[in-house]
Length: 364
Ligand code: NAD
Ligand code: TYD
Image 1 (spheres, rainbow, N blue to C red):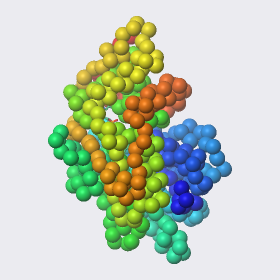
Image 2 (cartoon, rainbow, N blue to C red):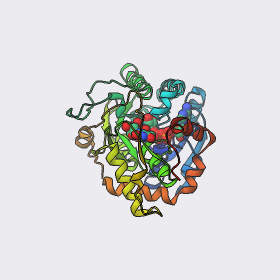
Image 3 (cartoon, rainbow, N blue to C red):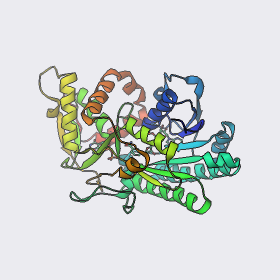
């Protein structure tokens, strides 16, 4: 990747996608990377353990809402590009309480952008020409699709339905406005549902794997016929690096896996992969543990997103075949029980008990 900046700030780099991105930058480029992460329940230093080139990585424990800290990090590390991933990211948590989502996703993005704008203004003409701020967002800002509707494009109306999606949409608007008003060289990306190693076991795929192995019920919200468009986290990260390298300032790029699955089909595929990798001692399939539970309030029925612009303009394509990526992910979780234990904080366990307690009984 010839055109990548040499000093990059990644916010949220101790989370699921952020840590995959920091790893990719560390292993496949020469860039110096500084991670700024608050280490909420979703952020873990373990996620960044074992980097191939630790001398090219700096970890800063801090909050994107702290503008002075953001300014200091940008200046001290002579940052040439920002990849902004720090966020509260779980829809179900945003339904229980949205304060942290407004604070981090909206106020935090605003403060970081303000600090980055000041930093950008002080750069040389050459530095300003090179500087990029990539704001990492979600397809959920576009709302829900009917079964016969075409996938979201960059021109789809923004119609967020959950507090999470609304907070991300608000942040997207602030970033876009910074470009339009101030000429700040920001690029927005909106990606579909990611899967892969190190995803917190509150999202569907790791919830299913963890609860299946623990012989607990596997909770499917409502009829399970909601559709998500799945993409491997490494394909998402490759798209982000391509956007950083060659994306045009002020543009939006949608990123998707072109892989629509109903939740029920996905969960059955996961159960089959587990049956293959670690069969239940009693010979029954893990699918026997599936239990339909009350639906999520405001549950979006279908997401699907077109990456045509990214493909045509920047030549990116998702390359991980879904079945292979899913099987690899299952194997990663089976081999990393210690990671699951390490990320299972009291805070996480309290949320899970609140979310699943009444209906997700242990089957053993
Ligand atoms: P995650 O919840 O796994 O990680 C979020 C990280 O942000 C954690 O390390 C956390 O400690 C950190 N963080 C939270 N608040 C912070 C703050 N105030 N200051 C600094 N750090 C803070 O999330 P993820 O799934 O890795 O998602 C990363 C980004 O990608 C988010 O912006 C999310 O909206 C976006 N995204 C996620 C998906 C997906 O499927 N997971 C899809 C599209 C877009
Ligand atoms: P999730 O992983 O939370 O991602 P998102 O809400 O951002 O799409 O959920 C993916 C889908 O799986 C979504 O339709 C909700 C559903 N789901 C369940 O059916 N059961 C669960 O326990 C969870 C966490 C999600």
